[in-house]
Amino acid sequence: MTDNSSRTQRQAVQKKQQNKKQRWLIWIFLIIAVVGLAGASFIPVFEELFSNNSSSQPTATPTATVDGQQDGPQKELQDLERSYQIVLEREPENPKVLEALVQTRLQMIALGLKKPADVVEPLTKLAKLSPERTEYQVLLGRSQQQAGDREAASQTFRDILAKDPANVEALQGLVAGLLQEKRPTAAIDILETTLNTAKQANQLTPGTMDELAINLILGQVYVDQQNYDQALTLYDDLIKESPKDFRAFYGKAVALDAQGNKADAQTFFQSAAALAPEQYKEPIKAAAQQTQVTPEPTASPQVPTTPSSSPE
Image (cartoon, rainbow, N blue to C red):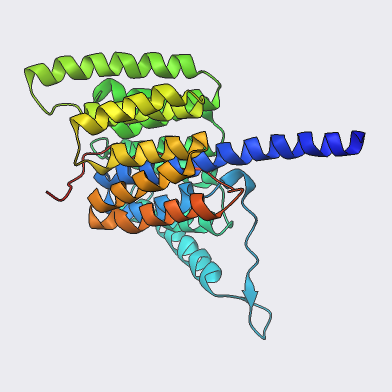
């Protein structure tokens, strides 16, 4: 009897942990939509890195040829990495080679051949060499976060926001870090302050800051804290304000699914897919299918916070 009770308790804890990972997997899709504003060349590898749980990634097992040597993409990436390192020994501040090295290492991270910490140094150099390229700084903050250096990540995001309060990628990264530190109240305070700033800025110059994006991040915090009623009320308001923007529909679908209301969640996933730009339709459908079919999902997503065009 005691064994059955303990097993039930363990299963309940595991299911709760898996459900939380599921929510973060969905939020990650939304991060990817945010990063659409950043350098397009980084998007595929960025998605590879941050759609995986790096802390639990297995190390890839290389395939082998008859000679016993590594073959396939692993060896190709390792050879590329070495060639870039050789060039950087001669030209340590070559931005094109640094960017190529980062891209290569991000792909290696996705295969379990490298860790997020391995891109921090070249990204730091890129951020210093090209301070106007905020996508380098955002990716640096994300990498620091994934590497477990929360303090450095927080400072990176705060530095970006000090120069550009409208940078929703940095805002989302800062909020994600606060949630990891179990500081939801601080996250909400920052978002509410940013919303007030956005309203004032938009009164002076409409469109200066994306209020919808900031509200979507706030909804994300409510869902993370299981404040589903607040999240759903917020998403309903956003849908009324922007009925042709897929992001609010997607956010509500995520909240409903996390709440356990899977039937209604599917309805809003469908609405989001219908309204979304072409590049987001299939990912939304895939997320909807996963939440519908997979009983105990293993990772977690995020709400896109960049403006996006929708069909009229």
